[in-house]
Length: 235
Ligand SMILES: Nc1ncnc2c1ncn2[C@@H]1O[C@H](COP(=O)(O)OP(=O)(O)OP(=O)(O)O)[C@@H](O)[C@H]1O
Image 1 (tube, rainbow, N blue to C red):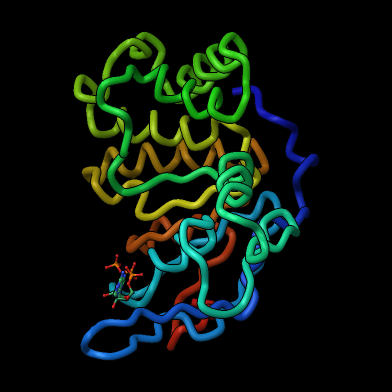
Image 2 (cartoon, helix red, strand yellow):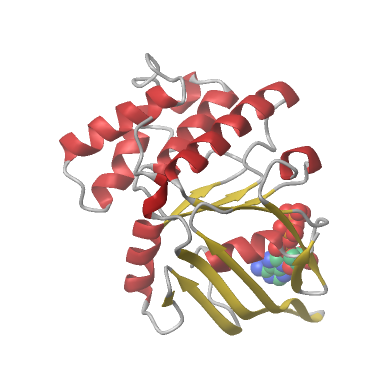
């Protein structure tokens, strides 16, 4: 796969959470999930987030991905504070700078594998021809040559997830956020897809924050962090 050379983005700050707070309010009262979480990821850094269920991993990824706003603190993407941005500017920054991979692929079922990788590029202003070429190259890099015209329903779970990873990398984001990216696959497929994910991310010099319950997968990343009482601490 031909990606931007690693040195371009290595060491550049991609994500910074500074004293981030998030509380959920319900009839039962207030649940403080994040109580001043700090985390910095530089280009090329791959960090595992391993923490017990319900401690706030998904919440943290949503805040880092600008899908929600924190109740306190600030989220910086490529050094830019996101808090003062309006919704439109946040969406634009998200589309340009961040790729997401979820436990379930969330591919658009009525579109082919190729189109699923092309569409986010076109939404970002990439001309169709360029987007097509990039999608072909990415899918081939994930061993999906010959599968481009298949809709997600005609792909295996592992193939669907590889398309989802290709889609996440399509706009050459500096930051990849992944929530249990192989959690829905059998052990062998998970192993294979995860190895491909790491290779692609390393090759592109992307910073990645990957939530996983699997300690063996976590051990392959550069650093492992956990959540304790609403703070991010080394695992
Ligand atoms: N929208 C919401 N409203 C109220 N409470 C919420 C909301 N979203 C999450 N929570 C609560 O916040 C806490 C953290 O949830 P979160 O989904 O971030 O945890 P998690 O670590 O990702 O869990 P899991 O590993 O099970 O996916 C949980 O107690 C959850 O019930």
